[in-house]
Length: 283
Image (cartoon, rainbow, N blue to C red):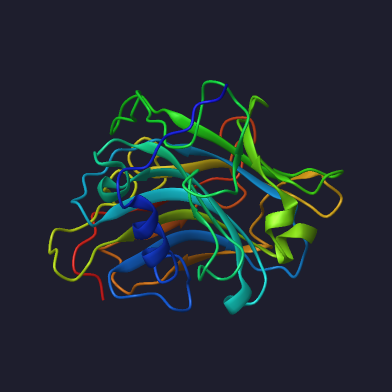
């Protein structure tokens, strides 16, 4: 027996009708923003890892705020994507708790894919920890920090994409068969935050812990030990030669990212960056 979080009435239709425009980069709608770091090399990746500080930004129903890893392959109309991290998403969950959240698609968010286990796709194997579960411990500004250890890795023998904790316990997997392009690996990785607010809600959407990032891990949303799985299935640290910052807005007072580059203590933070901000009317 494994735990499966049942969706509320109408949740599947919400996920399908909003899955396309709210998850693609090229067709971003007004009110959608993402910020973080992304790979720039023409390479094959078989996974991604990071430790993500767990925050609880306040959002209204209809808005969301996320911190996650994206693993992708394929042209835009055929995009295969797995997205995993935490999210505060009242319309999805019915509350303002920070919850483990995943999304997948195999056709550019058109007809396939869903959040968590709303549709056939993700195979749950852990009998306690599950998608949609909430986090009891939340990081405190200039205080205790709590991290979500995330690993998305493609099994070398089966081709399935496993979702794992850094301590190697397995939540479950996405079967290779539900994908086309991701069946052979990923071509693009992204790490960072994402927010959305419809035009009829004027309340700003905080990202991370709501603060503009700096070099202090306890004062902004943070990713540490940012790594990837290369073509030879080796786990390697991300480095500044293979990635770049991104922010699909224009106002640095809205959201931002500060890449700590490679001058960090590999035992303390690995490759790390801070991200997020208070949100607002962001041009």
